[in-house]
Length: 413
Image 1 (tube, rainbow, N blue to C red):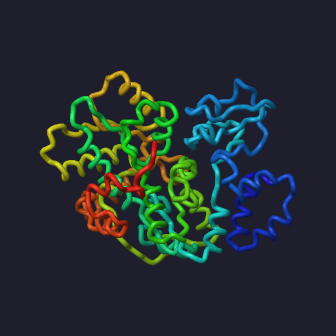
Image 2: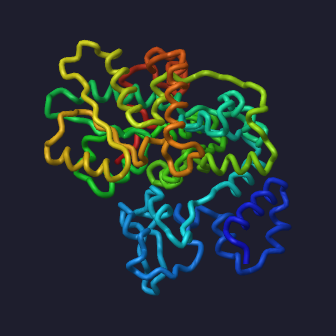
Image 3: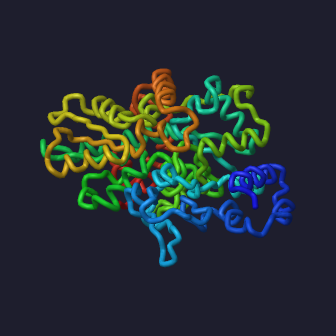
């Protein structure tokens, strides 16, 4: 019987060559469960239990570290992942000593969709992408590489991080009017939002009803091109879980990690560093720095300062990264031990650049993101004409419409 990794690599190669049906016919029937996971990932949670577990109860570190209690043995003793509870934080995968837990891979059906879809297919690339595919891969070269895969275009999700920054700054300005008020940023992290929704529900009124930049970009593309397929690319397994959540499902058709995209490049012999430039600079510094801890706070604070420089109650930010630190910050909020009024949480240490499916070490990823932010033409979304143009195309021409009638950028927590 093939190992899971062998099966994955062989099936990926066959799919890239449009020979997956021939490959599947020759497979050992014992590969059936793993094959089904790879062909139909939506049937399963975003964490896959690929082999029987021989660990006794005391050795199951994967169960103990799950902050959402989503991994538990069933009546027969087999481990089961509760899809409703799992947020895709990857802690269980990291702690599985038998290496039987795997991150969901959407790459096979995504490649099939790219190949067969008659309409447009867009790659929605997370702000943490810079340098992930080698230091000399610019955004323009990455765009060309993705087009060679079969995408019609690449959208930097940082542009929609700009829009969400503006929305959260406007909401802070409208709602935080006393020293006792505070706001929990919805930011870009589904693990942080999952903690609030599933564990700390009493804090939900302090969270602005905003979608993540990933969902905003997917919804915007589908509003402009209803038949388009949207494929998000980033460092995070939790984004796969987020894309399936009932109140935002349908915005993003597939979520691929940087690792999965790199696998595609290798299988198809695509070298992004050798691609032609196809530069299209649309995002401001604010949207680009979302990818590291503190980036959301800084972006909102700078934008609020541009919106209302003489505000009586100033913004006081506080950040936490990693689930334990996020829980500690929330506990301090509940006990009144903080002096902040804008709290940012990131499920991964370092923020998105520390995501479990990033290619680069988080310190190097942060350095690249900071440099990319510094190179931006515009400092905040207010300065960015592409934000104004995108909002106009989507029918938002006033502040009031963005705050009160923005179905594209709003969710129900």
